Length: 448
Image 1 (cartoon, rainbow, N blue to C red):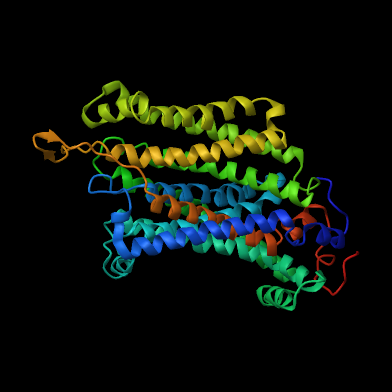
Image 2: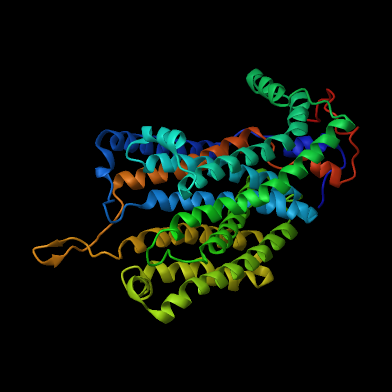
């Protein structure tokens, strides 16, 4: 890493920067999409779930698909901040905070989209007051809340030294912003004792978050696997969900690190070597995910029994076949093939591949949720002696709310990028051999 040699240069390079024209347009677009989603949700509150395409048969639509997607991409916090950190992968230091920002933003909206999916959101109180511990839904609420709390701590606690540096060294900012840094830094002075406690706290959180992160996606998979339906009745679902979550999470970090590097000229921190390593990591995770995907479909396809037979036919050659094979080809196969070559792991092609993976991952969650509901074990109600054909397609309200939730997650990430240093300054300084005395937030104005 071709990093600066002084903390002053480091502060100048990595301190938050004002939005340019592109940033302002991006934020405005996100706000408009969110407002449209809020308006659609008000309509849903007024008229109920009748404004959606859901029914007694397809009772989980793209809201639940979106929930599973949010939970999946949030798992990157444990992958980068915990697993790579505890394995002493120093190259991942510039990515740690980016991963935690993604995790916090997405797990927040995972909780919100569940409330949106409820026809009566006020009844969330019943779950809190009268929830039964035997219910996987209660497990999911508990583990999502726990993961959000730990992820928030894992984002905030390592921010303290950087917030103190910004409090003392960042000039030309509004008073409210300076006051915000002062409050959030909690009086950090940079003593050796504080750094000792900081390291210990971060390591403890990194250890704790790994089982919680694995639990959050495993428990989410149990919501499906504990239901007797073709396509969900699988013991493979837990590791299958976790493997897929690591893939989309790694792709999310790659996408954001490319944008950050290009927008803020951070080539000496987010180096080509880091992109190369993340590309290799994405290949490995995709191959593991492919293994579980084969396991998920091979056994039922071999037996072709009952509801599984109809579902497999629907996915492989039926109405969902274009989406199914599109996800496999463009979301898994092409990314793996391209990333096997060194040129494919350069920043721009890796960024394109990462976005293909993210889009494929969202549609993969759609395929997990929707097609299974088209094939209940009990036949659909007959009308005039003809079995009812089950249809589902998201309405405008559903798309608006779903896009609003995705835009909300991106807006939180954008705001955090605007006001927080998204690369850890003190960890980079430690890696470069600067002692803690140099990192103390004494009042020294940075060079112009």
